[in-house]
Image (cartoon, rainbow, N blue to C red; front, top):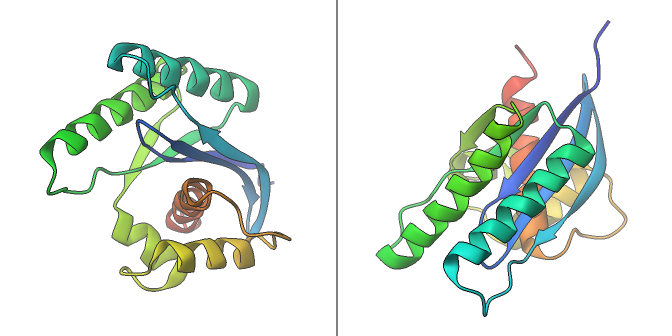
Length: 162
């Protein structure tokens, strides 16, 4: 008897982190919740990271996912923004680890390939396909949430044959 699995997909960011929570059993996938975490932009970096940690911890405690699927850091021309993104990712990974939730990284191209069938798809194409796959009435907004749901879908696609 297959049990329902729950995954939280995370599109990490220091200004906006998107999340999407999906339940799946076989080929049946349900959207449980999605949204964003937005640390206050006028706060100092340590406070923004703490905000991210406490809000992600609340989500993990409320929804109790079995796994976190998180987008891997892409290489950026801007070293400073890549470092900030890395710090945000580290805090999110720590929140999951401190709750005993395993995390799996997915490269942006792999997520797009999995959901759209094209590793170079743009965010609007990802948003459209997420809406179609999950049979949502509206496209998930903002794009951070559709990206997070896509990361969750990628995780489900990768693990359906295990």
